[in-house]
Image (cartoon, rainbow, N blue to C red; front, side, top):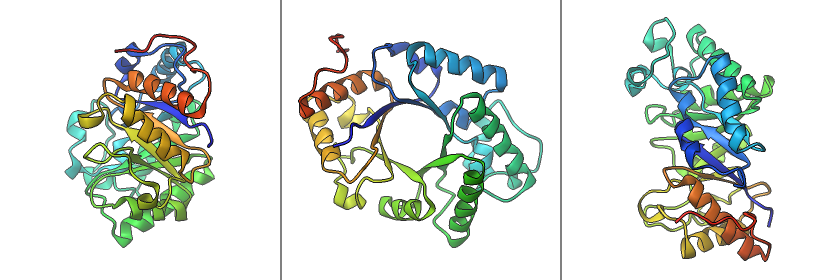
Length: 267
């Protein structure tokens, strides 16, 4: 099977406190940019901070909520950065001057990160309606013209199979949870295969510690999946520890040397 790319899904830069330079991290996804994308100098500082501990990692920012979320989603109240304009003209991928300006902020942030991919998180209020599917298609097409790939994280009523089907049609990738509520890996047949899919290990509940049978089951799922370039994201307070545990399990599963080169893993 292809070796999966392992990434950290960081809520903020503090998540890097548990990082080690030896961690096999291929990408760092920054959720903090959903609320407050940094300005140019701040973005360069964040990129340098990440590359100090993960020098080979690609950076992937979230799209600003003013592009994706409407006022009913209440992210404005949590953010410290905003743009002038009527709140109803922001969000839900509207073709409005306000959304276009908000996107330019995300684009500048991505450029400072040297990022060619961004994560688009759509809220529960962005339902699977015909209008919203058309808006999503237009948004993907416009970003492709700018050389930006989208990774879609859909909340709300979107069923995984439905999101995957639309993502394939539009040439996107999607983020889905690696485990169901009972701690079982999602089976590739139920997902229509794992091509175009980034799996997210949330590090909560039954999967808070990815050791032993959990790591082995996930490694097996990836080994039989139809995914040419699988991506596995680790989130939560144990993100780096779980990434190391999985990397070790994958090495054992594939009969390779430990990729951590003898580093002791976290308890």
